Amino acid sequence: MFPINETMGQYSELFMLLAAGTYTVAFIAFAWDLAKSSKALKSIDLKAAAASTSAGTSAKVPVGAGVGSSTSRTAGSGEDRLSGPADRAERPTSYSSGTANGAAGQTADDSMRYGERRAPARVAVALTVLGASIHAAAVLTRAVGAGRVPWGNMYEFLTTGAFLVAAVFLVALVRRDLRFLGTFVVGLVIIMLVAASVAFWTPVGHLVPALQSYWLIIHVSIAVLSSALFTLTFAMSALQLVQSHRQKAISAGGADKLGFMRLVPSALSLENLSYRINAIAFIGWTFTLMFGAIWAEKAWGRFWGWDTKEVWTFVIWVVYAGYLHARATRGWTGTRAAWLSIVGYLCVVFNFTIVNQFFNGLHSYSGL
Image (cartoon, rainbow, N blue to C red; front, top):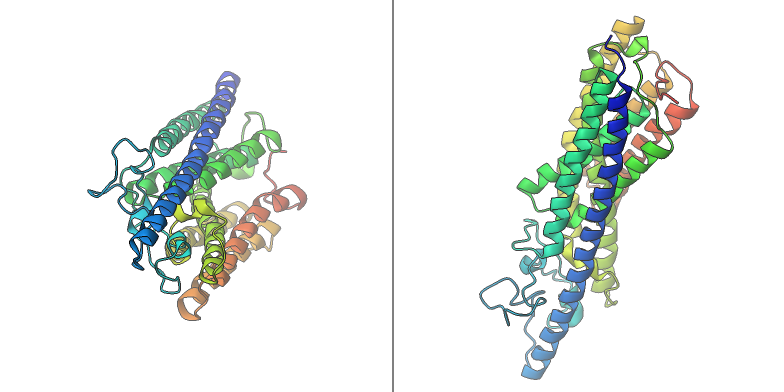
């Protein structure tokens, strides 16, 4: 067993604090981008509606018309240079054409590509990269200080999980422009770090004997990665519900009270992407369950013992299996699918917090 290095543990806590501060500034930048972009799009819509009315035409006016394209208006106008997912907006047939409501109801298409973005979005992503780098240093110094992998208790699991949420989000940006999720994902990362530091902080220490196994690396690493993916789909499902409600209100002739959601793809696009990510995370959770059973047989001589943690791990698997099956074969789409995905993530949170803290069992490794 490697000796405990308390100095490295202190460095880890300092890095965690710096990472949380950097994420907070990134969160503000993402929120500023949403607010600024929403205001600019609204101004463009008003100008386009006025121009359409004065010309006496009933043709549709795309959201952000002339924005980020060769038909852009004055180059000196910050609003007119705005580009975003609204440049390739869906045009729901239920919206009346040629009206301000119809234009406001349009959202990003399934490609989720922003094109050239404003400074706040670029700054926010850069800050998230910086925060994730500092966060990685915090996790690594915790590992060096403990002389082992840094997920032996709830504090370590939560801080490592928060890092993976940020890392998965940044990796996903390489393939799809998901910066509209930045405010929500970075916000969840901040909440996880604050909860780890306030409620679950544990000093650097050795592992309990039952965890001193190579299966800890295999089992827990897959569980943390799967949980990070479930966190992303939770954010998408929550946005899907908001976007769906907004689209229904606009199609019924109501006012668009959530202007910032115009930078978010349609509810259907969010649902499709969430479904694909949940499918990947479900495979990871299946391996988590299988490897946990194998580890249990090595440690306690049985594959399954109806321990509370084992039961809730299986409950999570059942909920997400039901979600995938219902959506693929039973036609559970739209808000029903979103709510089922959210219920699955709430089960993950319950398993990690309530079960770890208040239920005694062989998996009581919270460190509290």
